[in-house]
Image 1 (cartoon, rainbow, N blue to C red):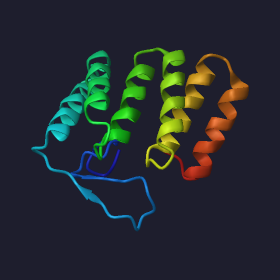
Image 2 (image 1 turned 180 degrees about the horizontal axis):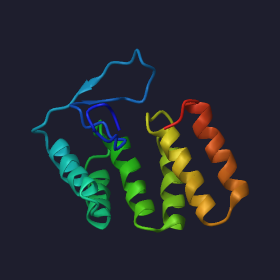
Image 3 (image 1 turned 90 degrees about the vertical axis):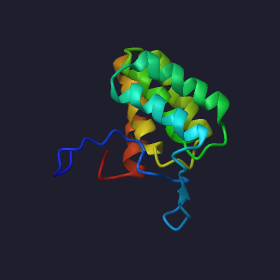
Image 4 (image 1 turned 60 degrees about the vertical axis):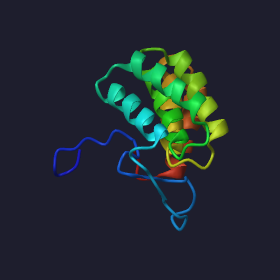
Length: 144
């Protein structure tokens, strides 16, 4: 939570999309009227309302309809979070592993490793959890 009381939801819903590249990479402007952005914001609204089943369905549809969107990595990450937050650590494990395999340059990579570690931990697979937590910290030593 920041000084204004805003909670960081791990999204890039500020009007620009991060390409997941180095900080010198250009920022891709987001058109708030574009079909992909409208669909993303609809799914994000469901996620922020804690309607994880609805958000998961919306993000899944978004990923199918807009695979080249600047929001594709954000949607895939939040889709995995929906599965995890719904109480399905095995499903979350699959989703976060898929995210890591397909979005290696994403700004959400450290969070994906962290939540993959939590999925393993919740399934009492501590040996698999530890390297995921370590991967998260190696990307961002300060933490989430």
